[in-house]
Length: 218
Image (tube, rainbow, N blue to C red; front, side):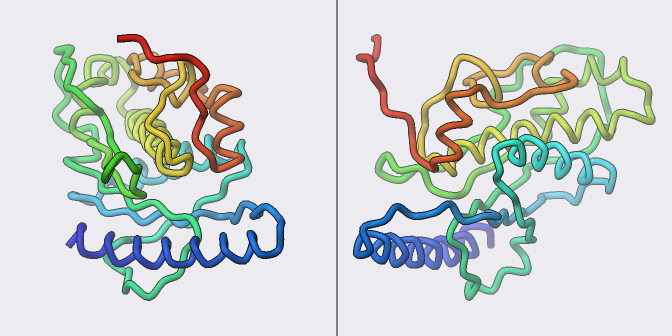
């Protein structure tokens, strides 16, 4: 279901983007950024309302600082006839809640990822709620029970914003600091504030990937 619906939306988005780019080229003018971007979501298991509110709130706060609005839609409601100039399709894997926490500290692996085809970043990816919860669980136990949904949902929103960074810039690269860095520490996901650094902000506003100026190290 996820792959079929995402593919239909992707075809529509690519067709419209190519059409608009052609018009802009004929006019000799750069394309203006179209906002808001459409974000289609699919949850393996529906999150509690408080967690969902925190995910949305944090993601919109991070992206909104750059002037990027988000229009949230359920992937299940997509018909394939929708038109979006800029879109992302994200699947949330596992349980997006804070039940069953353990005091053990675990390094669970990647918290989220985007998909590529022939080196091109595609506009869909995944956020793994189980891995995020396991990564944070020991510290979440130190948060008052009434505030855990907020703190956990905010962390999920930060991972989501990271994946949107890759999708909207069409770049696999990372920065040394901020939301776009390659690996997160627990403190990054639990801090009171976590934002993109200046270079990422420029990329997202321009909608263009970063041009590497140095040779890669091996």
